[in-house]
Length: 387
Image 1 (cartoon, rainbow, N blue to C red):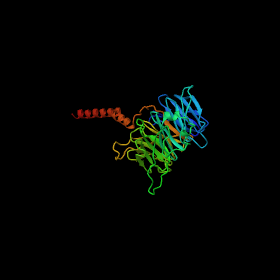
Image 2 (image 1 turned 45 degrees about the vertical axis):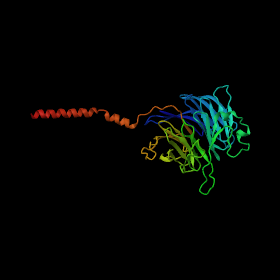
Image 3 (image 1 turned 90 degrees about the vertical axis):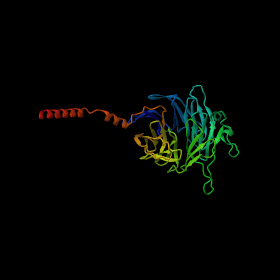
Image 4 (image 1 turned 180 degrees about the vertical axis):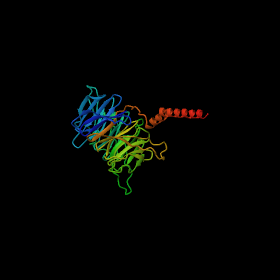
């Protein structure tokens, strides 16, 4: 059984437990708020669930099945109208949050510990914390992909001009806590500068936070290696409608899941930018993707969460993938789901359907045995009678 948390436009946080085959998933309401859920994050080791809301409030809960117990609630006063949360991460140290106007915050879970503030550039669209928490990455509207040192970013004065970027700076000069910043791709065929429109980003590998991929409003998927400033690869035209909406790294090597602003969700091979397979039958744009070891769950604007099968890319990048991911269940959420996350626990593997078939084939049929024995007896009687 795999477990996920979902948030929706009505402020509800729900538990979605995907049960073994042929049984409907269990959807349970855990918490209600007056404001829509903008982001969710789960710290699997400490069982902490964090939720950020559109009104600027953030809540941390302790998940003790089957309920959420409130730990701490606070407000991000720097969040202004028409701005939103672009990043949220629950960890053992506390809860990190980042807004589109660059308001960075770390709130420890201890009652006597005070929050730590930082300031980043504005017009951000996505923010991700590295798995080791020593650095983070962001990108946005005319904001190139950038990597910062977490400790330095939270130790500088957030009101200073250097931290907020208000002071005049030399071209391409890094901020004090900034480690690395990407350079724009080459000019187009008309020698015109290409706009920077990063809509989503993700670390390619949790063990090596030096490779990052981004999705753009132009529909491109780009991979960066921090040893160089320009993209190591640029796969063009992956997003078919309105550009890339969400890009999420799969749990298998070379695997990524990508959605656009249409009804497209597909698995991408990061070695060559080839679409391995796409999911059929979607009727709403996918706004959140949650991979797990056994299943993939997505939320969409048509008020459904969908449970998908997934298959890793083949060892040879040029091979055709015979196994295709499918939608195996649709869960109606009553309101528009805004985010879905896996709880990080290892699921109990359900027995595949073919195992059931093998089991039935190996079983002996008592009736058939009985009928065979009876027919053999009749044959012997006939033989004796003739003699």
